[in-house]
Length: 283
Length: 273
Image 1 (spheres, each protein chain N blue to C red):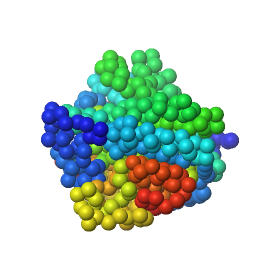
Image 2 (image 1 turned 45 degrees about the horizontal axis):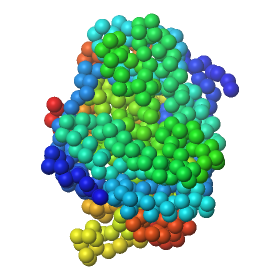
Image 3 (image 1 turned 90 degrees about the vertical axis):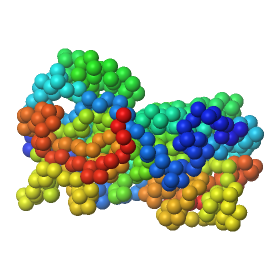
Image 4 (image 1 turned 120 degrees about the vertical axis):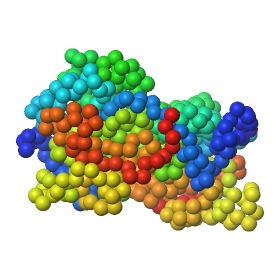
């Protein structure tokens, strides 16, 4: 029979939830009045950019790899990889062929996967493993034993990716995937390693008048409605709703020491923070 | 294919080379027509609380109707989770687990329901496909088999979006079924519930509630109804649809409704993009 749970072991909220409507705003708000348990509060999620770092090859990547190795004794790192220029190529081709966004996500995931596998070849001698989403229940073991683990940055949405507001490119890519890992695990830090010092008022590669922004709230950034951003727009939108990750940091991987400084909690690069973060008590 | 070294990075030549994929101008230039991969597909979603949890008396007539339409219509059946999901969400919330963990847990409840449906339809040639097999095998399976059953909840798992309100995973089986329809360019997405469609209020408690047979997703969102028979996020997804421009919500307790909906007749509520 319908709604066959009458067990009084349920909490008051649980009793309402068992038969309640998911469009009932009061009930949904009540689900937010619950505590936040941080699953891996000591883990740092570090995203290695695709186009910005991986595609540059040895000159850019090896110093980043060395810096990761140097930090292994001190910081636990979940290393996510971006996709980059091969993703841009296959997105162009697939769009030309009329394929939908979900198929583009499947294709783009393969590129982030290639980069993750390459990074794992470089870190293998240090005992660092590469885990696919299906292996994530094992992740804590590798982090505690070896200090780091590699994953591909794309969220595992596959054909279930959603259409973007504008155009045909998957809106939730590797910046978003890494952010959501950090949010789900209640990680200590979310650090993006790219090839710029952080956020600028415009793309500094194209606009010489672009000025640097060292620290800004996500609310202010969304309000500025910039035409271009250092991070996927979806990350900013999710940050507003996030309960555990209250700031994200962007560092320049081409400048040795910046990743280490960020891991040590120094205000290097750009920090985007949530000015309204107050969602649930931490337990 | 050619490679071009530039500013230290090795680029593959493409229209998007060196472009920022966050740039709205670049994104707008990617706008173009999308192909229907499986235009004959009908995605039929069986509700968890509304149908599955009622057991034999609600489920079996519906499955008989699916089978009766098998020769005429290619159907893939999404299945929702129901009360066991509500229970584990309740326990998980009490423990303080994050949205992504709740999504991972809840998805197993609908997987159970989908597996049961696939067993009940097995003798008619329906196969059960987990997400990786939907990606790799659905077209081949539909060419060889007589239909497929899948877990309605999308495989977002730990990567589920934090919702704007509260903490529950926003993408349930309605959203997952809609997204399967959208990506394949399906002919129909039909959500089977235990009400005739959308009303201005719950007709069980509000006798003066009026029925809404046909409405745009944006208008329905603006009404902020307390007892919407579809996940609110589906309305949002519909506003960005490229291929599936409407969904139909029908009452699966009324024999013949699914047959009418598959035939394109006016039954239940149609929500348009």
